[in-house]
Image (cartoon, rainbow, N blue to C red; front, side, top):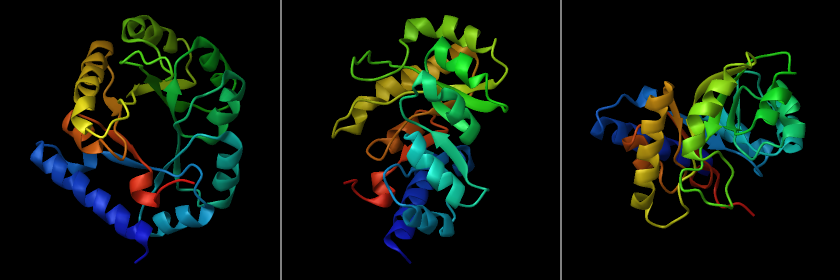
Length: 217
């Protein structure tokens, strides 16, 4: 068993345990292996170990991987989405976790397929992060409905970068409340350092990179 396979087994086991402790079914949580900057060979190792959902954030890098790897992989775009690249992203990716502007929606609508979209919400209002602010969500969620190429699937947020995952809990809880407010079911939240807390607070998609593939260069 490779180190990537061992890491995946550990993450999946931990996810199942946290789900049980939280009164949830493990099948309710989708693990996205964040493979940006890692090689096609690394992704193949994860694929052989059973992983099917992968996250990328750089269009050109992802294009090479998507073309080289099996067609049953589900690709998630998880990085900042530049409007001028949104159409191409929609043509390549199944799910986009970074929707935050009307200009993105207009470009995605030019693609000849429908994608599942998560609105990115910057709950902590951190200036270095993308995403709309919580008070803008109601109006923006209504505008998404005017673009049939985007199926509004859920909300996404990134918790504060900290060694204490408990500090992210209130942000994850607020995202869950916002999802109820706008009537969506999916929550993309939690990364390598805080996915346990995110699952406890209702995450349906967790984005884990370094805990699977190791430290990036």
